[in-house]
Image (tube, rainbow, N blue to C red; front, side, top):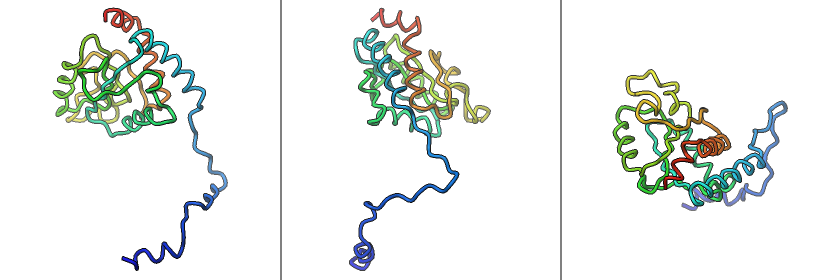
Length: 190
């Protein structure tokens, strides 16, 4: 065991050393502007507070995606975006949800799971399709194993296109979903 650890111990820690410079001509990675997310988030918080008494609970359902959209949904929960501070929570049970976030094209073997999740979600509820695959089937929409977009199995309230959509686009789509007249009527019915 000591032979395995001897070289790293002699070399020392690499964590404190500066990063290598970028090669010339290579652009820096683009990053979301912090102000855009804050503006959208504050508007989202006000709509959630007004329509849902401060808390919008969403259940995520993956019906066959490549996990690109799931990565962006996970980014919404990290400290940079932190949509929970705007009153949006991802819940584990459809029985506690105000809506469904559906990602991926509806694969034939997960259609029943989507239908059961929808049946377990209290009415009225939102159905939000996230990503190109959920909107219209995406690049695998012609496959024998796929039924197409979410609209082939459930009525969709809002579509958020992109492959995958950026977190700021998802927040903007949620804000759009809450601004729709049908959502206002549903919230009043509560």
